[in-house]
Image (cartoon, rainbow, N blue to C red; front, side, top):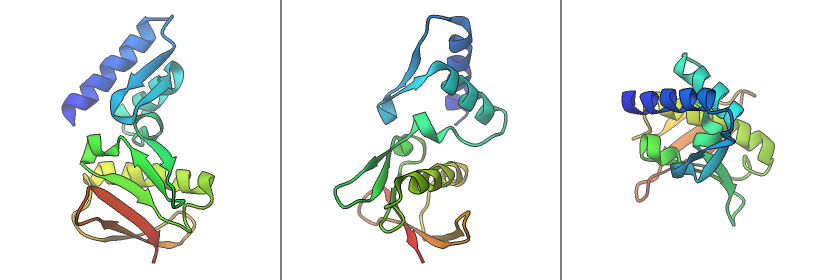
Length: 140
């Protein structure tokens, strides 16, 4: 993690130095992050704020209407999967995903089930898959 924090610090400095730079590419999430958004969210995290989940991870809808992260495994070795019915409201599910990504980066991933309370008071279960590197989330 210290190496990655240094890399993001360097990225922020490059964005500040090269005015013609349009976006920062992030391979693990297959994303392009607008320069100002990258600099503001990465700098905030480096200063103790939340992890810059949007950009360093992305969320995609699956065929079964779940919402899955891409790029989180780079940080913790696991991806996040928000199951229906939580995933049916894509905006709310993405907001929840951003908060959960921050939580998971702080704790370094999950080995066992974790029960948390969502911002709206809903009890949630985070369960790591036994056969693949995925953490599934649903209402308790």
